[in-house]
Length: 65
Image (cartoon, rainbow, N blue to C red; front, side, top):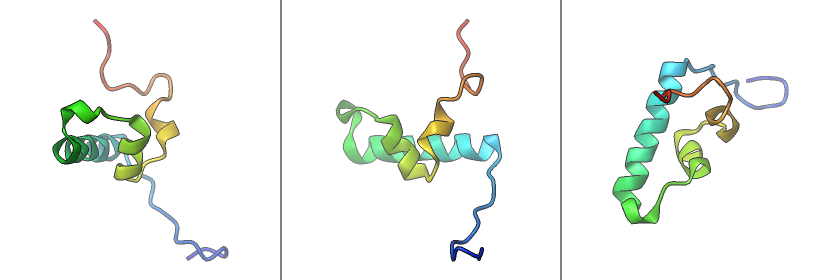
């Protein structure tokens, strides 16, 4: 633990983060159904990822084209 009493988290690789986000999205869709829609903040929270890291420019996994 650090001096503040919080355990340090290991930095995830991009691939790990993407896998965690996809798993969280699938879980939420299975639990709530497609018609409930997906909220990016909710998916990020379920995956344990900061929602800000999901929308950084140049970090998208799907590219138009």
